[in-house]
Image 1: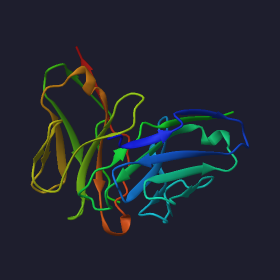
Image 2: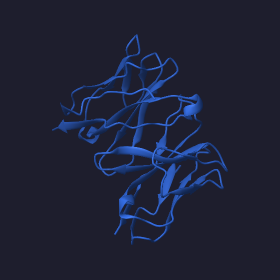
Image 3: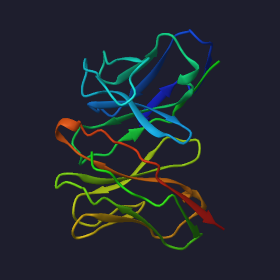
Image 4: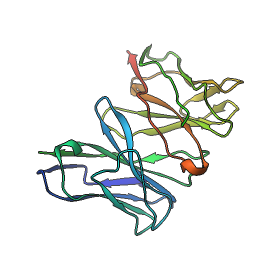
Length: 114
Length: 112
């Protein structure tokens, strides 16, 4: 049981380039989340999805887009990367939005924008 | 969202119990108390959660105050692998869609 898998694990982008981060979960979870983690800032929610075909903005959505075409996948896109998007990105999933369930996190994608 | 307050850091010796405190004086009746930990260079990992009663699992125990305004995560015998940042988070349902809002957490150092 793989849980939550993020690809790629590392990436270096030039300013202005685009890329897509893939999150895949095999637990049949309804809810999925994208967070970024910066030194001294903790984890901040970028976007989330409460089911296939749905997305919603989190705390820091600017500069990112997401899609949830399949229940098991949640994609995070950067259309024109900026140095301020240098961060570690974590994907998470939860069976439902009920607070009686925990999150499962992926191992992260370390992105550097130069 | 209701907030939590944790000490910035704590230290422990290996094989000793560790009690990590968390204050959440504005908790609502339907908020669950969640604990996660993040080992160096890894993603956060679920540890335990509870609503009113104390909870035990293979990783830890969660002691919840009777008025629910505070809780304590208990690691019964700390190991070097328990050195991590521990986050106490209130998870609400309803229109919050169960989103977790992370604070700064408690950095736990375990000495051999």
